[in-house]
Length: 197
Image (cartoon, rainbow, N blue to C red; front, top):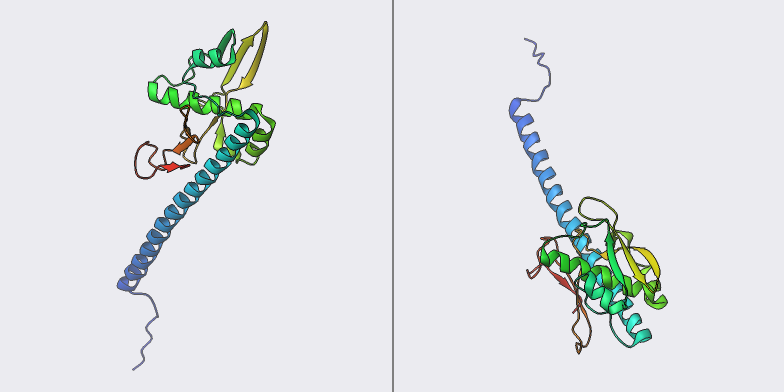
């Protein structure tokens, strides 16, 4: 009697193999997400350190820290400008909290970029941590008129690895400004925030 059975996988063997592959794929995806979030946190923490160093350089040169600016009128007053206009008009966020956050971050970049020593420090910052784009991807500029001269600048703000503006907090009399990222959940004042202090 001859036994000429072909060697083949049974249905059970195929299902067990498929289950093992799915479990391994799930584990890899989970580990990949964890590593991505960890890398983004490290990138943001590094950016906060670079901005903090630029702030120190700014202070060393000017003997003061940049003011917190919440709108065009405040920037106009600080710069003694005739007008301050964001281009395109209406491109800044309308919610008060987000608008304040953008203005503080944008004006911080504006001031740090005007002092050569702090500008040099900022040149080491990843381009991913800076943007002049609004939520629709439109490039923002600010036009500042003073003494009959009008100058247009890219209206850049600092952002974290998740695209949220980095908060700049400084009150006169504070020892050093505080820089805050909202973290992966993109919500401030939660446990995943990253702070300079």
